[in-house]
Image 1 (cartoon, rainbow, N blue to C red):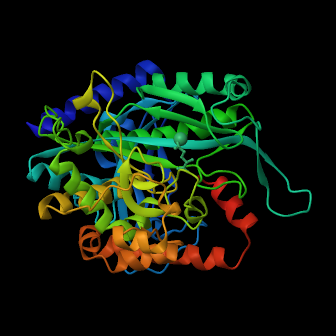
Image 2: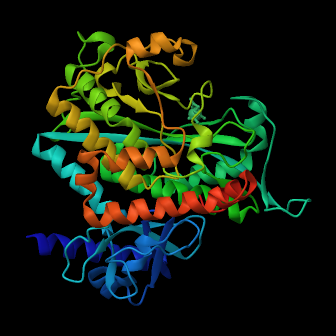
Length: 462
Ligand code: GLU
Ligand code: MG
């Protein structure tokens, strides 16, 4: 039965590749450094490669975002995995004529999921949820900076110069980015990413496009295609787009908030919704928040996953800087979103704010699921909602409400992760060892340089 279904998916993929004229088909995955990488198959070899995958060294999950290979047991120069694409994700790439792409798993030679495969980590989280009768719907809400890559007149690293100095949500921003955004939005729709909203955001050259929510795995796959499209469309127009959290030090950062809702199996009922609950949120919703807050410092190591992420997380920039939740509070790490009139149940969701696109989307969403589910199982109490700017509270008030500052650096977040039994267990020995090694090497490397070097390496890669 399973074999038959796989065969059908393969045949459909081959037919699409033929009919739509895909000469190369990229097999994409996201690594521990937050980089999207991959290898491509020719059309002629696709039938075989769909089954076997493409060979890949185990070392690549020990590679940092500076391409510095870390010594990790099990990820040395000896050993192979296969990059095996998921045919359900096949899409032509409108910004790369002749190319298609699929999201891929990293698979052991015996066909089992590799212990360091990030996409398999999210599947593992989804399976945990399913075991308790839940499904998660998610939407990534990415912001990015549109600009040009220009040499630094002083001879330092290249800089990202935004395409405009338009104001937050200003119509000037619509005008100035119009040609790019039309190509972008059409490219999203052509790939089946359904655009919800688009607007020029707070920072110079900053744009935001939100894509309709989907089941957890699809949402994370969508975010991979989103990142690829934002940059691919820009490159073809001689522009440079970056989803890095803080590509320009004195501009507002690029977040990628996660919108999540928990549903009954089959997505028939939104379990976060309760008309009688405070702010329309159910007990399950409050317990989920309790789990997120309890694991928050550790979670950040996976959701705000680069050195650059911590330039973004500062008070009064709508990114969140404190561990608390609130109703429509843009300064709280978790925001209860006000439901839409006429669709209160369908739209009840939580927004997780200390998250950005430098994270591996599979690890970030998987970790959010494990943390939230832990709260649901333990019936965690999230405490009182904070419905003011937590930065305006005195230290005493924050202490009374249990509001702690978020980690100030990736190093702090990694220490919290290393001490978080639930998340370390969920990651498993190989993945967590490699992840911590890769991230700590980034901290060392960036610690030896200035902000210009850090921003350069983030805006050119993410
Ligand atoms: N740019 C803000 C961030 O870094 C988010 C702004 C908003 O959309 O609320 O998270
Ligand atoms: Mg925004």
